[in-house]
Length: 267
Length: 304
Image (tube, rainbow over all chains, first blue to last red):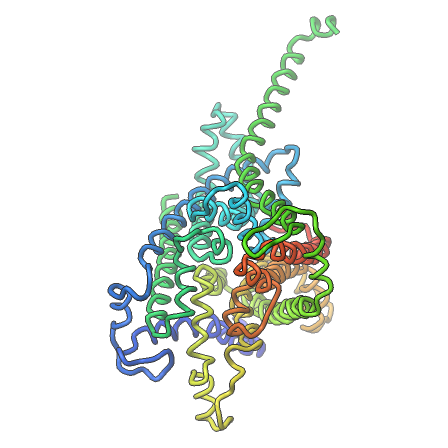
């Protein structure tokens, strides 16, 4: 192995600083959430305790955290399922030629670049004009899909750009019908990417704020609840909640990773 | 016609079957694309149409009234305050873009060209992307203990004797807004640029070196031109996210700075929907203008 150039060490240091920049702040609130009961929002730590986590489970004053968590979880799963199915179907459609394909593609890209507050405001106004009540499971759900579907579609493009169609042809030559080709050839090949799409769908929904702001109605999702807390909660209970939901997100990433590993091992 | 068919019936039947198969394929394509098209129609196209419509309406204190009035736009384009807010939005976008590009490019460069084993490349790359899957609001909140008057930064600087009293501008200022933007969005630069770099044929770099190019020359004449699509995609993401933001500016500036997104959300909280809608239309137009310009330089579908 040849020796490393000096730039390698400079860049390594830069990269390490970048990681510190990415993770440092979150790690800090992770530590601070174990403040003693008399501790404040910054260092020094006044003892260590689980006091603020216990507050989350007992205190009424922090609002409807668990209700909003359940709603975010349900919404995340709904968005995940629809994102996986709809973007897979659309990915399959785009492999063929059809009229309006490029319009639909640019619409999906537009969906990605339209500022989220426009979607929030627009969906809110639309429901208002139609006389429908806004609710997280209807208007909120749809508004979030405009953010997760384009991501899912772009992933499917990346997948099918690298997809070797000769496997399908081989299966078809052996007499497999379209359904069989999809179930036994295409699906196993794109399976790992679908886990990725599912992860995108769930976490983007679970953390989404702007698009749900005007479309969730009177019952908050978790990010909305947390944002509400920032204006009136000035104790480390906020950090405890932050730590818990970050751990939850990390668990989801871990679960997706585990899924990928299992799928990979089965081959 | 009939003669030909009689003489050679098999190909005729074959083409009919082929045509049927093709029609079936078309039908399938429409059916598969329909759900996406429907969702985007209902939750993107219609809502924007409603916004455009409402932007011409009038508002009273209690309700909004259908009308065709250009008042909302007249106000937007004549108000000096609005002009300043738009300018500051563009300024946030430009500064954040420059910083995320510099950092993102450097990080991607390090991962793509200095890390030699693929396993490590993937592992470090994933390490960079994990924060993307966690909550933006939590990531913003997490700056408070760092930047506050009694935060880590101030106490460190004071204990080193660099400053005598805490710096006020660390938190709730334009500085903290930009810092949060860079913190949240650098990832959107790293990922596409890294993707572009990984596709560069290493032989090109060797050839450039062998031809006597210096490291800087290789970067400017080989790597950057080949990374342009990645840079463009990252740019599109960062610019649209910053220009459409309203929550980062509000939270990190402690409501002391404004951008267009905040202008809109303030109008919304005052139930001034027509005015909010008009501002939203102008914001959308400026975002699409910028993106339209950038899209001329890159074919996104080919780059995935």
